[in-house]
Image 1: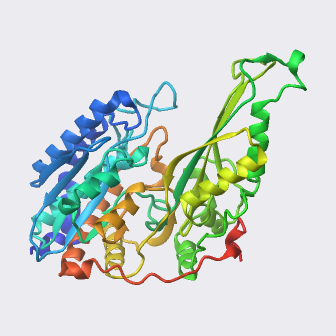
Image 2: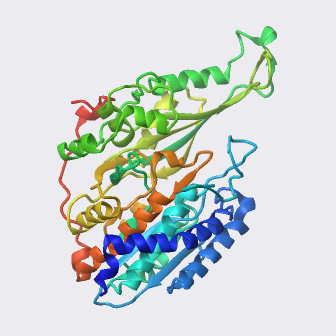
Length: 486
């Protein structure tokens, strides 16, 4: 093992020497529009998988492209020594749709644009930039001859909820066998304030549809007598939750919520989170609360009910005085540990039918929440690696978003999953002008190289796979308070 290659100074020099190659690869990846939700982009997704496999081979690994019922999965491997621990890095290479015509992009979204240390383009931060950062960290680990087997698992349908992932992992469990998975698809508190998730929120989506007629009708002729489906759906949504406070009114909704522990709240407080920074990073004019801890609980530790869109009636210029025959509302609930998406779907469906029996409820996009590993040798390895790469120890917070693959990997690969994310709020996940930057990439290369060294130092596979105890915290009905206060 060449430990001299793993000093902070050596890895800083390595990153600087690798910058041109990193930027060229990121350009190649970003300029493939691997939009998994768009059927017309299937060939682009396949092209992305092919390029990813070629790049793994360029970096000295073996690569396979696993075909699934949906989009493919790319598996890369370096080392196969049974006496060494095996670590897998998970990322996804599919992206959200983007259009300069429909969104305020400053540049073409699928044209890689470099502005100083900033890289702009769809997928730069979610999740191609972090994936390539980890890859350069892998090469540094290989050059240091670390006694650890390394894998990459690159998915290409994460942005559509990973519908084929579980079946594919089950079918290739032997090939994908590992002692630990590290996920690099999460967001920090702010620049200079690293964070690792202690949990992920789940997701349960719904489509509420109501039809009360066959065609539009004149409001002067039928108004007052005809039912208005848009108005009825507005009323229904207001009965589901209070838009001012965010409190969900559906009976039983909060029953299984696992409130944050005292230790988690301490991490929240020391995370460096500020309300002003949160508003600035996400371009929000106002929030439901101005209390920093309250905001953190709401976005990390409490479930939600959100309205995403409503269709029906006339939406053109001016006012067209008609009564629409049909309307629909798209909503979802973000869920927290101990909640079940299946149970929440039953509760919401039952409640909607009790309020308006004519509304059709379609259940969409189900992901259960995940409670992460915050103690034990692997969690400590992540903390030391992040501090090594970015000179500040990360806080363990809960992630507000969802990653469907995480639960699948923990269940089927029977190993702990930890997080070494690199993205910042200002990078704009799913937003116009999505970006990544060299500061995060160069620090991330050092952090990943150190993480592989930490994994190697744990020695036996059985030791690295031991996640450490999880504190047993019972669900408390006191958590029904929407502000999370006892």
